[in-house]
Length: 563
Image 1 (cartoon, rainbow, N blue to C red):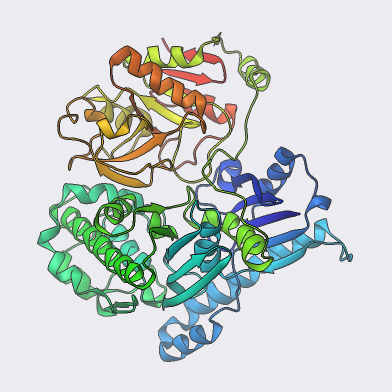
Image 2: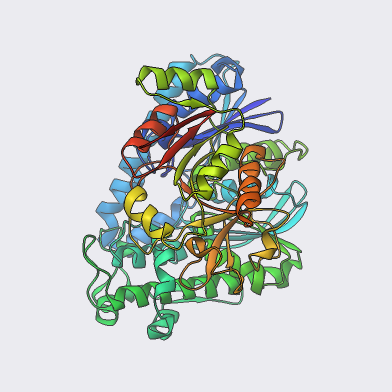
C-alpha cells in the first residue's frame, strides 16, 4: 500500500510517501521552489518524491491530507456572529482562501486521474490528529501522553490526549482565540520580526533580557485551568480579529513602542521577549503536569509549531515527571504530511505500527557524478578527496567555515548534518564571523552544537538524546570556555546528538575533529542565508558558497576553497 501524505492548506507545504508502513521520502516544497515557508500546492515535491521512490502516480493507493475543513465549523460561525468585526477577514481567510486551496487540489487531482474506479481514495484528516496522532504513531513509544500546540488548526489550538498502540484518546482541546501560538506570535511581531515565521528569533532573543521586568503582567495574560484548557485575556491582543497588528493599545501601554524591523533592539523589546518566553514555558509545563497526572505515562509526544520551541522542550525534560519527550524533526505543519499518512495507516486503517521516525534524512541526494557535472558546468576547479571526513576536520581545525553538502537532505527546519554550515566552536569570534559574514543576520543569534551520542554528556547537562536539535540544555560550566561559539549568553545550547548508524559521514567528521583538537563537538547551522530556504541542490550550494563568506565547500567528495 502506497500513501501520499500532503500538507498544502497552511504554510510549509510538504509531500511524503509511505509504503507498507515505511516512510520512503519526505520533501518540503520550499526546498524546490526556493520560497521559504511556501503555501503553494506541493506539486514539485510530489513529483520529486515519486522520482526518488521509483514510483508513478498510478502506484498511489490513498491520499491523506492534513486538514478536514468541516471540523469545528459551527464554532467558527458562532465566533463570527459574536464578533462581527472579524466578518470580512474571516470570509477572506476561511472561505475565499480555503476554497482556492481546495480548488487547486482538485485541479491537480483531476489532471492526474480521470475519475476511474482505481483512482486513489482521498482522506481529509483533522489537523491536530495529523500533528499529535501522526507523531505518536512514528514515535518510539507504545504508550505516551499526547500534546499538540500551535496557532490554530481548523479552530483548535491545543490538543491533549493519550496514545496506546493504535488507539488514541482525546481528553480536551482549547479553541481560537485562546492560543499559545498566537500569544507568542504577538511578541514576535512586537520585536520587529515576522509572526508565524520568525518565532525562533524571538526564542533566541529572550535570554538577553530580564523576564522579571514584565513577567507579572504577562502571566496574567494567559491561564491554564485544571483540565489543561487555555484562557487568554484578549484585551491585550488584536490577533483575534484576524488583522495585521496582533497587539492592542493596552499591550503597548505596558511594553512601549514596538521595534521597527530595521531598528535596534531596546530594553523593552528584549525584556518583553524574555517574559513571553518564560510564561510560554510555564504554561506548557502546567499542561504537561496535568497530562502526567491524568495518564501516569512515562513519555510525552509533543507536536505543532509551538513544539519547535526547543528551550521549552528542554524545560519539559528537566522539570516534569516524563522520562523523555519525542518531537518529530518536522514538528510544524511540514510534518503534518507525514502525520496524515500515518494517522491514515495506523489510526484509520488499523495497520500494525512498524516504523519509528528516527532518521530525518528523507529528501534528495546527489551522486558524485551529478555533482561533478554541475561543477564542470560552472567552469570551477574542485579537488576530489577520498577521505572527505578527515579533510573536513582538518579545515575545521584550522578555523575554516565550511559548507557541508552530503547525503540525503533533512526534513524539517533544523540542519542536521546533510545541508549544514560547519565551524570549530573553540574559536571565540566564530559566532560573530558566521552571523556577519555568512548568514547575514542579527548578531545575537546563537548557533547549535553537534556532539557524538557517546560523549555529549561530558559537555552538556542533558540526560537524554536530542537527535533533531529540539531540546535546549546547558553547556557544563567547566566546558563553556572550550566551546564558546555554541554557548549562548545564558550558558545554554540547542544540542544535536549524532548517531553513527543514522549519519555515518557526519559522525565521522565530528570524531575526526575530536582527534585533532580534543573536542568532539562541531558548530552546526543551516546551509542558507537569512530569508532563504536551506540549499537543496549542488547549484544551490554553489550559489550560497560564492555569495557568502564561507571559506570552503565540501560537496560529495569534492572540495572547493576560496583564496
